[in-house]
Length: 192
Ligand code: GAR
Image (cartoon, rainbow, N blue to C red; front, side, top):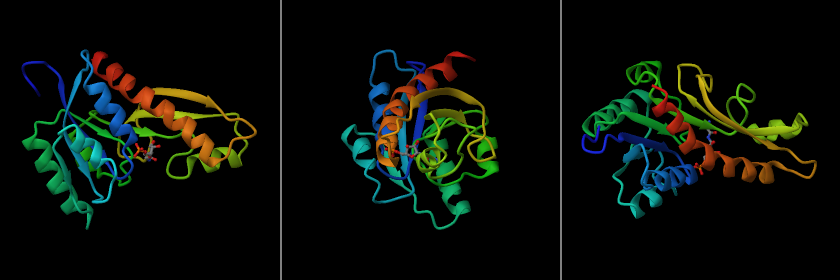
């Protein structure tokens, strides 16, 4: 924990594009931010999101994912060295072990592109359109040991229009993801 400001030392885990990371960095730079991003971890050396960390001089490290145990051993060490209090999964596409999740009890958040509990897992927009749903949305939830099933912190809906396809829906949902992730962090950190 960064003692002087009382901000939560935060690690963001990514696997790709990193637009949610970008929105979290933007929030972390606001005056009233409750977090300081001290570490960005990617399991993918080509993740575009690493550029956002670099641009903002945030310590970023790629951990090659050969197997879960060696990935998590290294991850745990880095989280400890950096005194991380809060972990934000932001398009991180690997599943963390129950053991690691337990160690960070209730302090790992994930953002998911659907109105959970609907459409856990992958291809959320495709499934929502296929099922002719009227709404989709995004959810920020606490990570527990079941996929996309932890306590919901914040959720926001978007309307699915008849003209929407997977791509256009994905774009709309992503826009609200960027809006709700910082808000969910504030809600989590001010509710305890
Ligand atoms: C986001 O839509 C996020 O909700 C999703 O991956 C995308 C990452 O985009 N995450 C999951 O599907 C996790 N199950 P980003 O890299 O631009 O933030």
